[in-house]
Length: 76
Image (cartoon, rainbow, N blue to C red; front, top):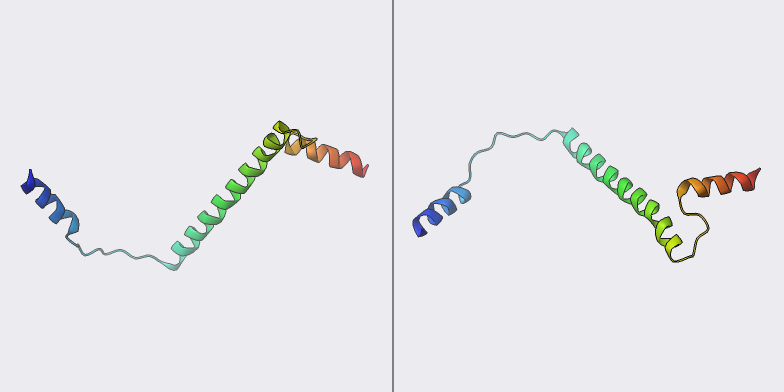
């Protein structure tokens, strides 16, 4: 058992030469992914915020659509 673990440890710690190249576009793709993830998280939190606020009785509208309808009626 110790021999197997020693061989596995040796294989996992052995450094191999990697012929990999990351071009400048890779950084911008990672940045776009991070920005998109933050936008999705923000929209999800905002969507559920109305449900949480409505549950505790602190809001008149229970969704984004109802809020937009109320705003449209106020401007007419």
